[in-house]
Image 1 (cartoon, helix red, strand yellow):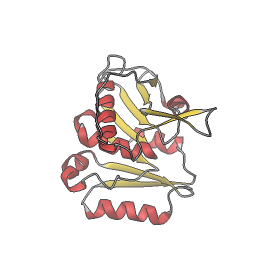
Image 2 (image 1 turned 60 degrees about the horizontal axis):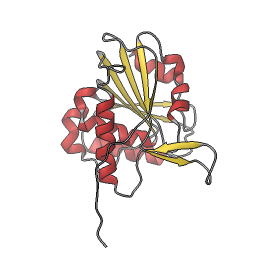
Image 3 (image 1 turned 45 degrees about the vertical axis):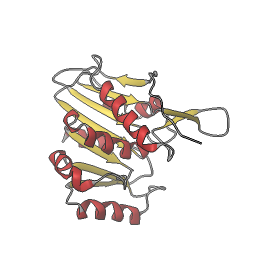
Image 4 (image 1 turned 30 degrees about the vertical axis):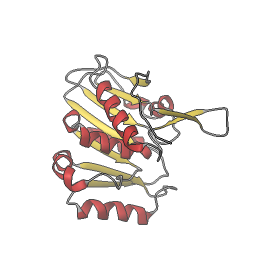
Length: 211
């Protein structure tokens, strides 16, 4: 048996709220595993305005959240054929950010939540010129990403690392491990904690965006 690959064109989906402005702000928000980008964006809808555009792309793999019917979410990748999936979503997100209804405003923040955090840091390292801020929320740095090779671009922007103190998927030992990995590689980051579970905290996110 031989494995083969074929590149094709396909249609992707993304949601926006707010108004694109050249002198304004862009927040690209990457959802977590099995989340729906529309509902993920709704969590941040109060942050969108005439100066800030929020873009929530959908992961390339849709799936039923429970069983074989009902609510649908999406995933950025699985363990299968992962290198091609990574290349595909980096190319997809890079094309998305240049669309006329998204544009490249002067202030650009990339936020990745949960599984989207690994997606975000991979995308940022592939195209660091696209963003001036990187926020990794309730997610880890993927072990296959070479931090020494990407140290310069990561330290150019710095990383905001955010985890809730009651996160049911990330224990405090996991937080310590993430910090240790970044420290060992000499990566500059700012750590933020809030009282809450595996979710966004809008007051904290608002504060980060205003800094």
